[in-house]
Structures are given as C-alpha cells and as structure tokens.
View 1 (tube, protein in one colour):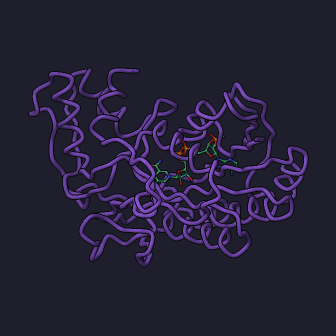
View 2 (view 1 turned 90 degrees about the horizontal axis):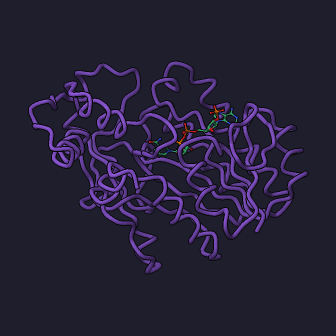
Amino acid sequence: MKILITGITGQLGTALAESLQDNHEITGLCKDSSSSTHPTVKADLSDWKTVYDAITRINPDVVIHTAAQSNVDACEKDPEYAYRINALGTRNIAIACQRFDAVMVHISTDYVFSGDNAPQGGYTEFDATAPASVYGKSKLQGEEFVRSLLSRYFIVRTSWLFGRTRANFVSQIVSALNEGSPYTAVDDMYSAPTLVTDLADGIAHLITTPLYGTYHLTNTGFSSRYEIAQAIAVQLGVPHTVIRKASLKDLRLPAPRPLFSGLRNYVWELNNFKPLRSWQDAVSEFIEGK
Ligand SMILES: NC(=O)c1ccc[n+]([C@@H]2O[C@H](COP(=O)([O-])OP(=O)(O)OC[C@H]3O[C@@H](n4cnc5c(N)ncnc54)[C@H](OP(=O)(O)O)[C@@H]3O)[C@@H](O)[C@H]2O)c1
C-alpha cells in the first residue's frame, strides 16, 4: 500500500516508517525540510490547501497522522496554536482523506480522560471522555473531526510514549542514572509507558484489517514515573536512593494532568488481537539498546 505518515521525524512517525517500510511505499509529510531517510512532502498542518495538495499528489491508500503539538504545557500556554494544530490540523488531514477515499489512522491520547473515577483496570473505549488540559481538549476535537468526516478510520489512543528519536522521560531517567545524577520522579500519577516500536507494530497489524473505529493501544500494565525509575535503577545496578519522590502538584506544571489515565486495550482484546508486551519488558529492551 501507499502510506503517508505525518510527523515522520517524530518519535512514533520514525518507528512507523521503520516498521512499515519493507511491505509498503512510505512517504512522510513534514513541517520543515526533513531529516527523514524517506521521501517527504513539505506542509504545515495548519495550511489546509498545502496539506490537501500534498495528499492529492501522493494519493495514498492510508494516512497515518502522528503529527501534533504534543507538548502538554506548551498547549496550555498557547491554546490557539494547540487547537489550530491538533484540532483543525487533524480536520485538514481528514478532509483530504475524505476526498481521496484514503483510510485515516489518527493518533490520540490518554489525556482525553479526566482521571477522576477511573474504572478498575483502566479506561475503555466505551468510557466517557472529559479532558482537563488544553492538549487533551484539542486532541479530542481532532478525534471528533475524524469521526464526523470519515467512515474508514482508526483512532488510536496511546500513552507515555518513549523511543530513540528524541529525549523522553525514559531516556532522561536512563541518562541521569548513568551519569550518577539524582532523579526526581512523580509517584502519584499513573498510566502505561509505551515503546513506540511496539505501538508501530500494532498499528501495522491494524491497517491490514477493515475493523475501523476507536482503539486503545499501549504496553501492558500501569505504573508511576517513580516505579519506572526504580525498575530502570535495578536494571542499571544503581542504588534506589538516587531516585527522589515528588507529587504532581510539587512540580507546579502549567497544564493539569490526570492522576490515573491508564487505558485498557479493550477493543483490541475483544478482537482477539495479541496484547502488546508488558511495559517492564519494553523498558528493559530499550535500556539494552536492542
Ligand atoms: N509523546 C507522548 O507521550 C504521547 C502520548 C499519547 C499520545 N501521543 C500522541 O502521539 C502522536 C505522536 O507523538 P510523538 O511523541 O511521536 O510526537 P513528536 O515526537 O513530538 O513528533 C511530532 C511530529 O509532529 C510534527 N509536527 C508538529 N507540528 C507540526 C505542524 N504544524 N505541521 C506539520 N508537522 C508538525 C513534528 O515535526 P517537527 O519536528 O518538524 O516539528 C514531529 O515530526 C501525537 O499525535 C501525540 O499527540 C503522544
């Protein structure tokens, strides 16, 4: 298939290109001139005409839309930009998919949930959304555009991504502990850390099916950042004492975050798809550099 990946230079976009390149023809859509090793077209998500023309030229079978303003605090500080990119930018992709009858995969987030009264075992795709942050609200609006404009789509909500493309909470913990620096980690906020290569392989499977709709897709198990840091310390052979506990409110971050936003991969389970491995195995492989 011809697959267009928006955000091909990002954490997930890079992993998707790697996972899909052997069996599909990959093109990336980038904001700036790209460092990607794949062919790319240049378009800013907010410029609907350039996005439309780019998708017209490529005429893809599938568009995987990973590009976003994914910085939660930056969204809180600049809501207009967040809505322009995450909500209207997603609409712009969906309009082009509608015109050219391409399947759209839209990547969304656990932050569409409030964290209040979370069900035992995590939020399912059938639970009510109630985002607290501008980031969560703007991503949810993006979902709504996809649902209202398209019939052939996958909305894939995921959480706490980590990979090798850019610094993230797992790579920061590993670097700090390797340097012998203390690391402060929040112990009252829970979700599922998810390795982008595992998520990419899951999406590669999903697009071979016609089972459209909304999916939660994460590595298995929930944890706090503090528990993740402890697991990393054990694997690196570093004493636990270098990890300091903090509560979310101690950090005084601009954007509110759900204290529990674990996603149960319920529709994935109901389809009898193979669950992604545990977050512990994913983190362990990441540290080993495989
Ligand atoms: N990171 C997480 O923990 C997390 C958790 C849940 C869900 N998600 C969702 O998962 C998706 C992938 O996240 P990620 O961590 O891979 O993101 P990322 O590493 O921040 O990459 C974002 C990509 O989007 C591109 N982009 C940003 N603004 C753009 C614009 N105006 N026009 C065109 N391209 C633009 C970036 O290009 P430049 O580098 O050129 O700016 C980059 O390639 C996002 O939709 C995010 O909301 C992320």
